Length: 154
Image 1: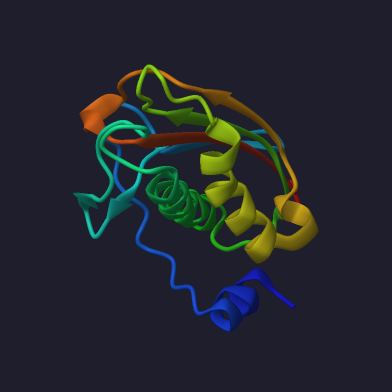
Image 2 (image 1 turned 90 degrees about the vertical axis):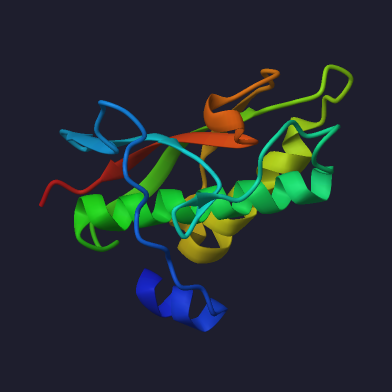
């Protein structure tokens, strides 16, 4: 089953890839690696989840924010590659979660992204992951994902 068929089966429609928020590229293809710039929980061009997890957002809301952010990552991959046929696998997911000083459960929140990647991409969605818990992220958004993927060069 293709990724597009899997998305349809799951009832997921990918958004348009969000534009860059500054003077940088949303993605760069270098050899067989695709580098996706930081993606945020943006929906229809608007910030959807703002503020830190642990005060302004619950872990459940953080999970939903990570899932939405992962949808934007997939939209960038599709835009970069013209589809998903050349995607071999995700390699690394860096998760940045705006966090209250007394909150420290990033795995639970980042599973929102990881679960979506695995559900949509199957084996190609397996990845390494690291978490950062700063007190604030750009535009006061709650989640930022930075993703590297392996792609076929043929």
